Image (cartoon, rainbow over all chains, first blue to last red; front, side, top):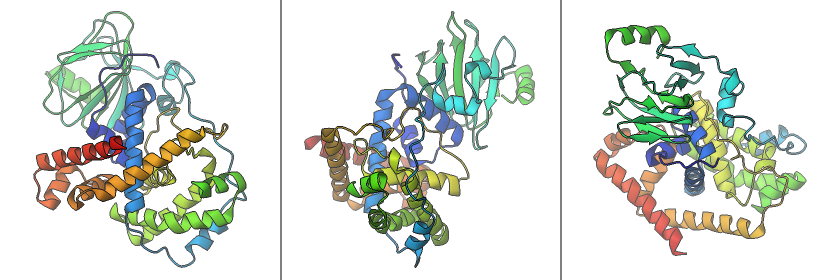
Length: 215
Length: 174
């Protein structure tokens, strides 16, 4: 994708993804960013290589007696033909299409007020992932975090206290950040957001809405 | 690498047996370090090697060493078995389509790089090496690592960073 990405994954998040310890929702954000960012992709591959070196140099306890024969017994006659590579089939990166069950036009949006719409994606319960669609000029309600939040822009852009985020950019926010992202004028801003705790909105009404809409 | 290509291209069972002998115990050891019981690690190691046979066509020697490829299969099996979860994969980053033979110079470079990385890892001071290994065994946050080793979190993080930088330097020197 020929976009200029300025906000990348942190080393820590990338290392967690490569080690396989991220909750699925964060892993999805990483997979989508890697689908759009060659720099981070190269770094992930380097970290995979280090994983190979760790495996190679690690302990090698004996396998159970007859293990090889057991595995040989269940091998197909020949390795199966290669599966189709997961490549871009539509507007959205392939990992998202898997979770939506279709492209952008298949997303089941629900209104959460002020013209903002969202769709929750099915992941394990350690964290949650959602698509957000914010009309140009509209702010996502002010919120603080409990835990980590990752927001990746898929279309359009948003601006907050820390900078401007366009397609492919990812914002990683911890407990300390209180920010007010506002969608840039123009096309709707569509983001993929993952949180390891429900967003905590300020003010009574948003909090009621929060339990109602599962924000 | 030659062994896996023999599996891929000729369904060579003797080559598979040699790969099994080398990698199955390492995968078992890796999974036990990650917190699996010996029995679960044994079962998963067998699954990982069976996957290596099934998916041999997806291996691309210009992208990774066999050990790296086995690591990615083992890691995904671990997420599935230990965390009951899955790891979304990026698009277009499958290990090659198996349709075209990769460029021999690229293959040589990738395999050479993997060897050098392995040597650099072995050359690290024991404590730094152990930090890297633990990061890959997974399911231990840096905070838990700190509690276990008695080292403060900041020190752990800076040592991880130092260890990785040193690895990069080692590789750049060649």
